[in-house]
Length: 339
Image (tube, one colour):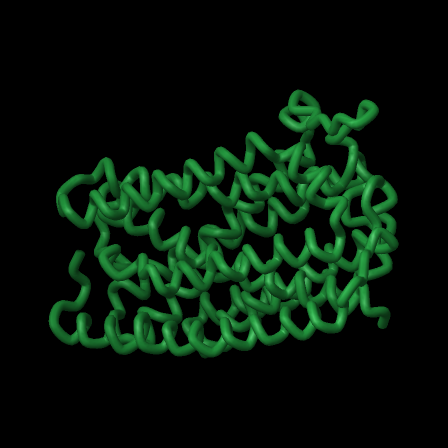
């Protein structure tokens, strides 16, 4: 494997980790609002502990390292993605700010359902907006006129492929977070909340697989080269389907919930890397390819990526254990199934 592919694989891992952890956090906000104000069921997660600055900071760093690494090794991405995604990027930053303020105000005003609504809804709008980056990488949505890079907004808005990616981004957030919360609440002994999360996981698994099928169909009409390349990696997508049905079977049977959530992770891991591998050699079709790589001080930067990843994974794992497990275990001992 060439050094370019090694670096891309590492960066892709950063993005995958961000997607999984952010999905859990985003989904918690939505389910907290839905469970409390819509379905009137016992909350599956107390929102006071859903947002921890240290945990979210590590998650943001994963995404930041991916972006900085991509720009460092493939400088053309700054010119194309930077200019084309100025407005979507500002929208994402605004949504993140609104989400943070909504959570802060909700904690000050415990009965302010409007703040909880904003917190939950922005958790779905942010991944939808971020998905535009993957969408335009397929090509056909950026035009270059001389030195100007232009995003074809109307074409992007009317594209079936674009909306299928947005659809998958939203439903996968809900599916991943529900699967995690089912495992997590069951382990904490909160059976009422775990059954609620189980219902959410089973429900959102259906639109998740449906959205994946829509992407395959719409990709064939949008980028036939990528579609045909994806056929060469059929085994990765077949594994993803296997893990999907394995997770649903275990969740439905209420068996080995840790393995079920692991299957969910592997489902997205195999599909995500199958998508990435079949997309090569293009990073932004047709403007940026693997050959656009610039490897000045490559080994120093590669070592920096690995070291940063190590320093992120270790405290992240410890935070997951201390903030999500032991803290809620104490809470469940005090009041099970409360808001």
